[in-house]
Image 1 (tube, rainbow, N blue to C red):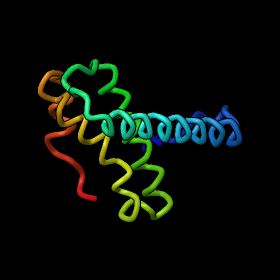
Image 2: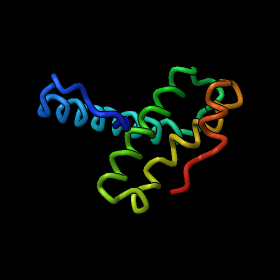
Image 3: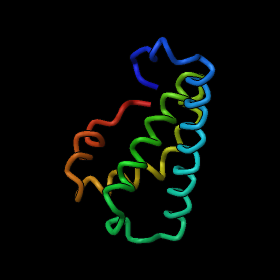
Length: 105
């Protein structure tokens, strides 16, 4: 998911398997974000680790959906994570830069 090439000593099969696992785990994390928001809890009580997980999962999904040409049609899937990130950026300073200039979808 990075802009750099993978290690040439790693098999393409292993790289693909790792990418699939990253996508699978990001889907689980974003599903948890949506479930969390559906019960309307206080987002300010979430940990910075939760914010990091939301950011990484969102980044993985943006790259994955973008590569499949589905980013515009599936952008709503990221809504819960973005909502959490916007709230947490008030408390977690490193997030401010990440969410203050959102990518245009």
